[in-house]
Image (cartoon, rainbow, N blue to C red; front, top):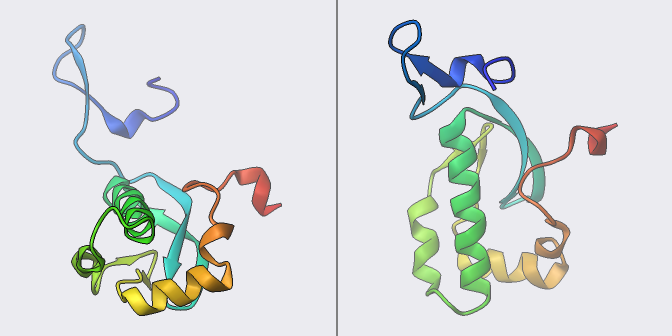
Length: 115
């Protein structure tokens, strides 16, 4: 594990317990929904990756009617990879009807998918 993600782990002293940091700076390509539709962007750090996952879960629950449209308001002005997340319910509905939401199969994009 230390070889794969060395900057995400902390060890206070040699031979001591190894812990995971609260956040990291590793980047990953994620799929997000913006006012321009579905995009694959580079999320910089664990906080942006977590925000992408939370946003995805929220808009899917809103579209399923499990949460009110006002739940999208918490993402107003939030950006991932320089792109603002969708927070307008009417726009989300129109993207859903256009099929853009259905294009987002997974949160993370495989490195092989971009080739």
